[in-house]
Length: 135
Image (cartoon, rainbow, N blue to C red; front, side):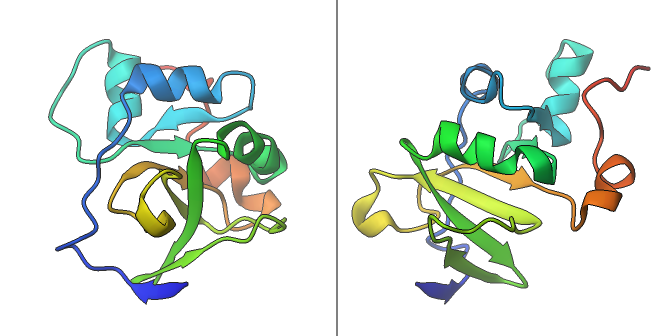
């Protein structure tokens, strides 16, 4: 399935930071984006419409294996959404994860997480905020 992103039906219903943290524990992934900053600061700075998780290319398959019983993965690229096959080894830069129990496994009427992966192995340090970053 490949279709254009449609904000009238593609509403985000993100998991909580606590649920995501439990789901990604041990995978090498970390909370990032606005909510990740809030967790790092220890306070909520604003309402968030989505939740971002960053993962290196080396850890992507481990993360996907940990999440695939609950979530379906979609490449989000240039305004289009395409369901990822189970055998995809080269992760997209932006992956939306939707509730696997959603009718017809549609995305992302029940989108839960946005996975961010660097475009190449050499870009991983510069492109993603690493979990060890301190103020």
